[in-house]
Amino acid sequence: MMPIPVDLPTIWAFIITFAIFAYVVMDGFDLGIGILFPLFAPGQQRDRAMNSIAPVWDGNETWLVLGGSGLMAAFPVAYGIILSALYTPIIAMLLALIFRGVAFEFRWRDASHRPFWDFAFALGSFVAALAQGITLGGLLQGIAVRDRTYAGGWWDWLSPFSVLVGVSLVCGYALLGATWLIMKSDGVLQARCQRLALRLGIGTIVGMAAVSAATPFLSNDYATRWFAWPQVLFTAQVPLLVAIASVAFFFALRQRRDYWPFLIALALFALGLTGLGISLYPYVVPRAVTLWDAASPSASLGFMLVGAVIMVPIILAYTSYAYWVFRGKTGHEGYH
Image (cartoon, rainbow, N blue to C red; front, side):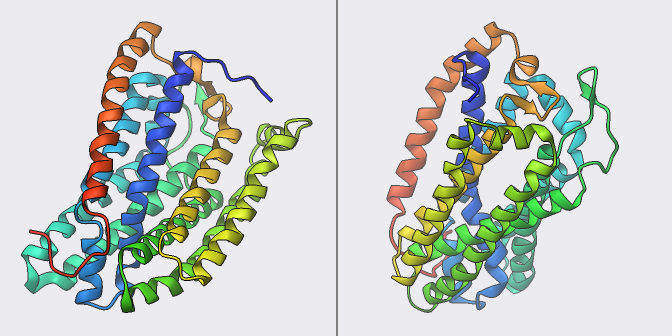
């Protein structure tokens, strides 16, 4: 195993990783609800699904801002390379997030055009999730770099692998959405989501397996990190834990549990992020730029760390309070 030094670039890498995971956890389930939206009956089912995320959905994207701005400030070289290489899917993601945000608000205020806004909400959610997955796949498959700048073409990000990651993430977000609604609803909507969660759970696990199987073939570096002796003794625990979590997920679903399917789905995402970290570390741009090559000066990282130490706990506190206040099952009356 490669030792992990405790220095400012590594600390900032963990902060950004935490922000990304928080975003995936919190915005993932509301994107998932948007992806599933066309499968819910117009009226009370859709209204209840929307109301389950209405108090928290816009605050969830705080973590996306923290991750993106943290990458720009802490690792500006990597930020410039990644944005140049993945400009198209990132812009598609941002436009889709704006589109779904507008649709979210307008479906309540403009009831005469609610079917259009429902479609816009679903489409924006799907495109945002797909673009995020394609962005991740484009990064993981490698970016052409020369003299610390992007040296590839306009469409290098588009490949069968990046599309595979994109589709898998759409399925995973939809799973989070379905399990969130199992937790937040009852009756017909809950039963519908339990059936959806079964299929989406199978799809997500198959997607994780396919991405995991394809990743070592992208580069010999990935294969070495996963299969070289003796670190394979550590890395083998990740797929083992995924298998255990998968069995636990289907057991919880069969037992009609309210909370456990969602919590186990989060565990699957955490294990996926752990696998991503194993594949990438110590690179921030795979096989091209390490954390230390891309990092800002130590004085800048230290100055920003003071702000992060203050602000991240505040964000966690008010986010936790919001979720606590709006705990429990939701109704179908609109939030105004």
